[in-house]
Length: 531
Image 1 (cartoon, rainbow, N blue to C red):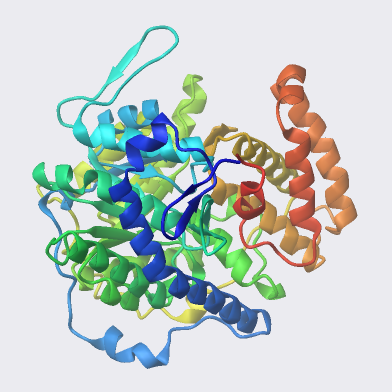
Image 2 (image 1 turned 45 degrees about the vertical axis):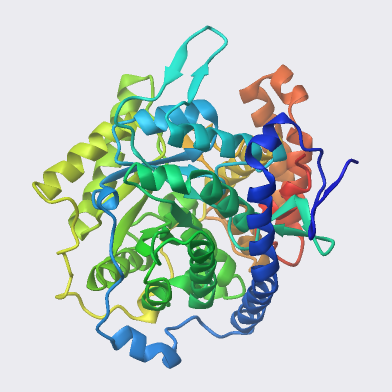
C-alpha cells in the first residue's frame, strides 16, 4: 500500500491525477492544521455522547438544561444572514455526483444541499470526485455527457450551493493522524472551503455548510471554533462562513437556543431533519419500553411529538432571527398518473402543513417535486422572502413531556417485512457505493434505513407483539429476513441479485438487528465494506 507522508498526516491511498486536483500542498497544510488543532476535542465530544447516553439507558429522560437558562431567557440575535440566503423556500438535496449536481443546481429551487453525508456512500473516489464536482460547479465549468451523448450543463442562474459535511462520528479512513483515521467532517470542510471560498465570495456568495447529527451545544461550539480558525487563517471577517444546523437528534432539540447562541456568528438557521430525528428518538430511548414507536408509516409530522418539535424549532429560530427550515419529502414522482397524483397529494399536504406552521422553506429529494412545493411556498409567502416575522408567540410553552410523548399506531407484520426489505436493499446499495436509492417510490438515504433496523431491534428488545399477536423475537426476525430476501430476489431479478451484494447486506442487517448492544450508526460497520 503506497503512502504519502506530510508532517502529521498519512494518506493510505496513492494520490493520482484526481486527488492532486484537490489535495495540493496548500490544501493539505490547511487540513493538517485543522486536524492537529481539533482532533483531541472531537474525541472528547464523542466520549461525552457515550456518557450522556449511558444515563438515558439507565432511566433518565432528556430535558432542557438548567445551567443555560440565561441563554434561553436572554435577548440576543444571530449575527446576520447573507443576501443570497434570505430566500430558501425550496431546497433540493442529493449526493455530490456530477450529473446530480448539475440537475439539482438547475432545478426550480433556491438552494442545493450537496451531500457528503447521508446520501453519499463515502468511498474514497466518490469523496474526491465530489470535491472536484463542487469546485467545477462553483467555477461554472461543470458539464457531464452520458453514454447516449446527452450533455448536461449549468444554467445561467443556478441555485445557491450549500455543502453538507460528514457528522462528528464519521471518519475518513484513508487519511490517518497519530495512527488513527481523521474526522470525515473536517476533511470535507477543509477541502470545500479551501478550494472554493475565494471564488464564492467574489461571486457575492460564500462558503456555506449544513452541519448534521449535532447532539449538544458543546459540539456547536467546536464547529464555531473550526470556522473561526479558518477565517482567521485566511484573513476573512468573522462570520464569513455560514452554517445551517440540522436538528436531527433527540438531545439537540433540548438545546436549540444554546446551539444558535454558540454558533451565533456563523449560523443562519436550523432544519427539521425529521427522518434522522425519528431514528434518534428510537436510538436514544432504546431502553424505555413505554416509548417504542409503531410502524414507520404511522410516524408522520402530525404525531404530537413531531408536531411539538417542528413548532418549537420555528419559535426558537425566529425569536433569534434565524431560519426554521422544514423537513425532507422523500417521495419520488411516479410514471403512473394515478400513483403520481397520490404522491403529489401527500407532498402537498405535508408542505402546506410546514408553510402554515411558519417554516421558511423546505426540502425535496427529487426535481419533479420542486414545482408543486414552490407553488405552496409562493402562495404562503406572497411578497416576502421568508417567514421570520412568524414568531408563534401565542403558542403554549412546549414541554419536555410533549417532545418525548409516546406515539400511537400499530406494529404490523406488513410494516416489519417492509422495514426488512427497505433496510436490506439500502444497505446493499450503500456498500456497493450508492448512498441515495429509490425504493418503493421513496428516495431512501441512511436515515430511513436506520429507522427500519432500529425499530425492529427495539421491538425484539422489549418483546413487543405485532397486531396479529405474533411476538417479535430474534427467531421471527431471522425467518422473515430469509423470506424477504427471496422477495427482493424476485423483485430485482436473478442476475441483479447474484451480481449485487445482497447476501452481505442481509448478513450485516441480521448482525446489527439481533446483537444485544444497538450499533449507533449502520454506516460505521458499513464503511468497513467500502473501498
